Image 1: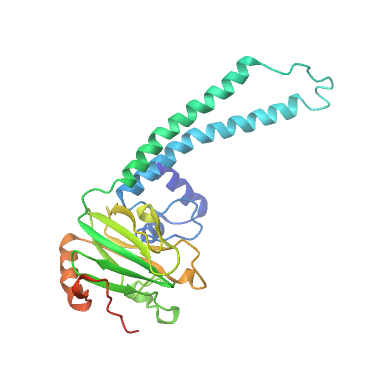
Image 2: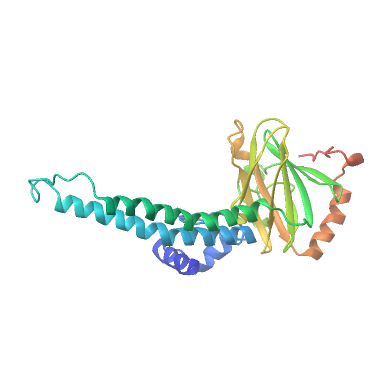
Length: 277
């Protein structure tokens, strides 16, 4: 069903399927987009399925309400019905429009709670990453690998499009994670409230000073995916993007070995080697 909706949207907007696939594979929004980014995690898959399920319920209800309103306007306007009815209650319909919404909410609530439980219960992590928000950049720490670094947005004047860098989204030190692995994300902040938001992975979590929040994802596709801070955190709020590279497990092991030489975490503390710019 999602493919059908995607095909219809593509035809209506006059976009080629190939161009959309190339853009979506990078976890980017594309021009004239009206739907979600293409899913790249197990949780995003489930979220999109729930959204489609919800649409199948809410769309007929909206059409029904619209039909009833039009019927009332035509049937009960001043010309068609100059003498209004005098009754004030109808027990059957009053009971029906009370019971039916309750049943609809129950039908929606069951998969909703199931999805919330799936997102809230982090499985045994293969990789743990502590994410710290700063004004206005991100700090990342891999405590098990003793890797820690800062990540700044690449200025627009330094963007290299030939290297696949994206304006306002590419960073100097991206996060690297292995595909098909449980990635535990611990978020906090060093100053004000920030929030990590990764649409392709379906996650959003606040980074609050003095508090450690937790979320997770399991990437199902290799590629580069982008996110941003989604809490208004100051004048440079729009310039602290998140770039995540999902690679094979072999490439991830190679990156860890290289990153241990490039970055340092001293005595297990979250001291960070500043990257000269």
